[in-house]
Every structure is written in C-alpha cells, then in structure tokens.
Length: 316
Ligand code: SF4
Image 1 (cartoon, helix red, strand yellow):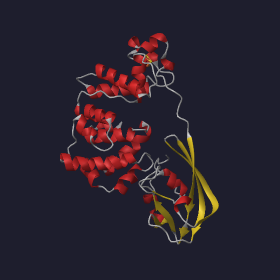
Image 2 (cartoon, protein in one colour; image 1 turned 90 degrees about the vertical axis):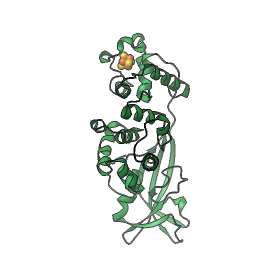
Image 3 (cartoon, helix red, strand yellow; image 1 turned 120 degrees about the vertical axis):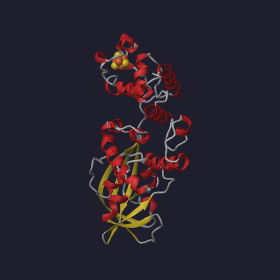
Image 4 (cartoon, protein in one colour; image 1 turned 180 degrees about the vertical axis):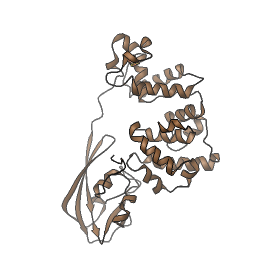
C-alpha cells in the first residue's frame, strides 16, 4: 500500500482518514493523486477548500475532507507544522477520533496504544468468544480492553496493522481461512466451530428511502447551481442542482434522468427535471458555465444529475 512505502505522520493520517468507510482498493488511487498534489502538511494547509474537495471528489463523506483541511491548518498554527504524537493532542484535532488517534500514534510514532476497528472486533470476538451485539458500546469496550491487554508494546504499530490485516485477509466475515490462520491454535471460535456465528450482530439497520426532485435550468451555455446550506441534512455546503423545494415559482417539465445514490442507510432517488423560473433568484443560486461544472460539482450524485461523465475511478 502506498502509505506504507514511505511512512510519515502526514501520510499515515491521510490514509487513515481516507480509509474510514472506504475500501483499500478504492482509496489507493485517491491517495496517490492526493499526495502528488498535496505532498506535505504545509502544502495542504495552504490549499483552498474547493481544491481539496476536488481531489476528494468521488470518495464520499466529504466532512472528512473538510476536517482534513481544518486539522492541517491547526497543526501548522498550533504545532508549527509538526504532527503532535500524544493521543490527547491528536484527538483534539478535527476529524480524529479514538481509533484514528491510536492509529497515528502507534503507526507513525511507535507509541504503545491499542486500536480497535471492525477487523479487530471480528478477530477478538472469535479468538476470545466474545458474546453480545458487536455494535454495542459495551461489547466494543470489552474489545478495547482485550486489545490493550494484548498489545505488543515494543512494536505497537506493526502489531496493530498485523491485527487489522489478519481480520481483512484471513479472519474474514464469511468463511474465514482458519486452515492458514497463524493463531488458530488459540482461537476459541475455531475450537468450538463458532467462526460463522461470531461476532454477534443485531439485524442491519433498515434502509430509509428519500426522494428529491432536482431542477435543471439552462441559459446561454450556463446551468443554475445551488450552494446547499450548512444546515442541510445531506451534502451540506456542496454545490449541486437546486431542488424544487429551494426555488419559489419554479416550473418543472420533462424528466431527464433518474439517479440513485446511497448515503449511509439512506437510499436517495433523484428525479432530474427540466425547469424554468420567473421569480428572482435567491443568493445560494448561481449561473455557472458548463465548462466550470466539473470543478464545482464534487459529489457524484450531482455530477451524474448534471450529466457529467464519471472518470478517473470517481464512480461513487
Ligand atoms: S482461527 Fe479462524 S476464526 Fe479464529 S482467528 Fe483465525 S481465522 Fe479467525
């Protein structure tokens, strides 16, 4: 993985931010493009938010990119550009929680801090036959305790990565490869044949269906975009097409396309319709030339809604 080839707090932090909610294979090309454009923390701290979002476009969960920029600026202003190594200081930075702080401290600085992610929960649940819904805080706390007890204190970074790797490659959710597992001789689940029933989970959260009507207004080679308020539930602060609810006096016409998009457990259906408006436009609306659209529209849902082809692996 590219973030392991040349290790630094900046690259470890960046990879951990990108890997939240996203598969390794998806992250690799994004990581490579990102570090080419923003090779170090100071370069990132000087960047504008739109330029950072542009290199994040397609990865989703855009608050991660905004927090990345805020944290880079905080490290420059509060720590003279040097990443702090203590858990408390790391956790005080935007977007860095318990797991990420432990990952940066142990992998980049060799500090003896355990960490727990979904892979580690699965491995420990099976090794020690931990019962109870793995999504519950009490179960997760039990895994954090075990992870702390078993941490390799001389090589905590390697240990943590090895545990996560074991979960990602061997102790996988379905049909774990117990025959080639290096810890099978001390695994409770393997001994009792419980691999497939651990970790225990309650039923998955039911998807919630949401419908939007997006308006495509065109005029002299320009398209009307809308800057979503920071209070919007979905995609706050993003440029997108205006929804019908945003525009007073808008008249919608033919259905141009239907887009389906998922955000967490929400399944969003966007009906994109031709539209016309006679009322004056409110301030979040702006006419943008079609040439400029790709750089304004970051989220794949708006890129598809505006008819911009997805490229460079930006298919999410
Ligand atoms: S023996 Fe099987 S269930 Fe146990 S840790 Fe290894 S892969 Fe997972």
